[in-house]
Amino acid sequence: MTNDLNTLLTALYVKIDDWLGAPGSCARLGRPPKLTDAELLTVAIAQALLGIRSETRWLRFLPHHLPGAFPYLPGQSGYNKRLRRALPLLQRTICALARDTDLWADPVWVVDSTPVECGRSRPTARRSNLAGWAGYGYCRSHSRYFWGLRLHLVCTPAGLPITWALATPKLDERQVLMAMLDDDPHLSAERPGLLIIADKGYVSAELDAYLAERGVRLLRPSYRNLAPRPGEQFLKPIRQLIESVNDTLKGQLDLELHGGRSPSGVAVRVTQRILALTAAIWHNRATGQPVTRSLIAYDH
Image 1 (cartoon, helix red, strand yellow):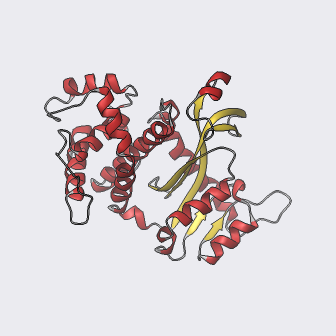
Image 2: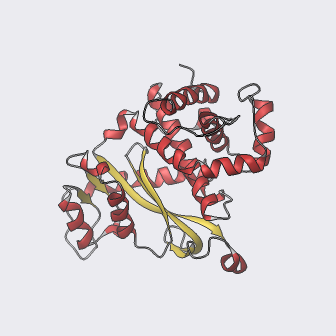
């Protein structure tokens, strides 16, 4: 099968449209919209893959480069409102696409968090609608402070997102991980012998006990003054995988340039990029591509 953007969007539209039309899916009340939910999600994924951050520019770009693909496109305001209202649908679509791959059942997870900057000036931090949710945090990787949120991401070693959360940088990574697992306990329950690989930031007796109660093992580096744990010598290359996934989100999908100015705006733009990554992995896996997380075929 041809591995390009048009093929991906066609396969995505068919998959999402069939999924939304299946029994048990949410039915929309009232007059049907001119732009269907399946079309909206396809448009949102294409925008993230092509790296066009401006919604106004994107809606001008689309008719000229994908003529006839979408018979109706709303204005920028209408598109923005539809997309923000569709946040729960975007989240369910990520899960639906991820479950449609053989990677979903992988008994190994990798977890880490990464900064999502939302502003730099002091007046922005004071006046922003994100104040109270976003906050100041420290990024050890770049040795700098930032104002914004942290994206806590759990994925498979191949980069397939399993679950994620946006939280203030003041929250402890270990507490956020436990909250994510509590939010959907079936994720860990349906994978007997689950192994989670993390860094030193997840060292905690409380977290170890929490995971042990659920039959989950946590493998992470030990502090220098402690004896190495079994299997620790294999950790470094595996932990680099989550850094690579974060680099894909930031370098190719412009995670840090989301442009959100409100909680719903930031949430939907971050989710939009995670959905685009999931869609690319889903299509690459279905078409037998050698590099599961490659976006090169879809960014032009």
